Length: 247
Image (cartoon, rainbow, N blue to C red; front, top):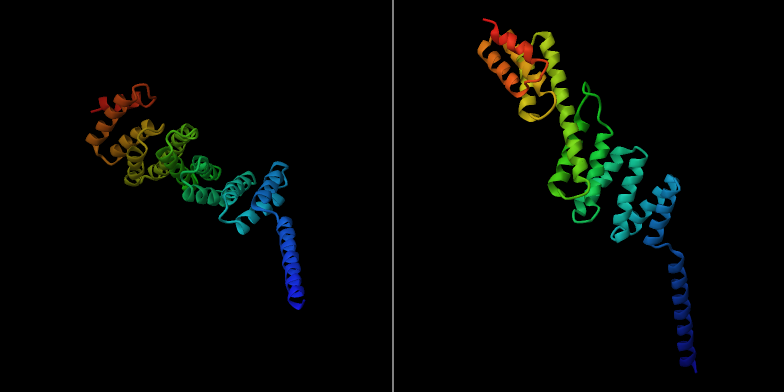
């Protein structure tokens, strides 16, 4: 009788414990539920709430597939809020650890866009410009057939023009000061690093003028001839021809 009573008591305890455990597990939100709540809040524009739910997915279910999606959604959330440093960090982590994911090209493109939003005018530091350029070049190199690749190619052209304009701006600073050797260093870097940009024709003109000031007449004449050959319709051509006709 005692043995039977003991077994019955143990069964009751076990069943009660299982029932309690199941109830507790059912009351805890899973990764999918947390993610769905985060997305819902995101779509409603309640960004603080959205961030809270998405970060919970990462913290409580870091190895789940939902964590991967939450990471990208958090990056989008930060981008939308113009928190570009945080956004680019999450985009970078996403495509670095999931390079084969269908949305990896998107993450890399968005990383470039984060840096692009921080690009300054040509007279300011161009570090964000270079970072954006590197991101878009990586995208074209690793995902050439992506739907984002063509956009990236167009932005690469824009960013190279911006960097070339910055080099020209600095070169002209030295030129106007009479530091023609310093100007030549900047102007030559444009021809070496950004040979297909819009500033090349005026760069050639000022290279020739800098050589003239330095009394490097043959180098000046050679540069003027290059300008005429490459850019026959340039407004600088008439001046270049006059320089070549001078004794």
